[in-house]
Length: 70
Image 1 (cartoon, rainbow, N blue to C red):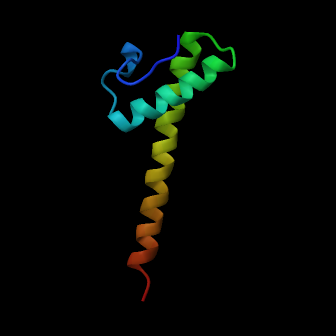
Image 2: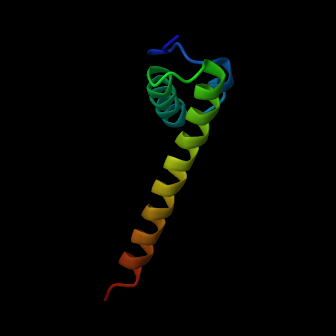
């Protein structure tokens, strides 16, 4: 069952909106590839968290570089 708008798995309930939205996007793609719901939900959340952790790390590195530019 694909998820849309404010319809998302209950395990996503307490996630920040940006992570929840990305997790739903990933989980829906996994469902289309034939994965079962439980797998799609778990992998979707894991990959969404990794996605934003990587973005945050990239932003921190860029900020450090900017702070050290003369």
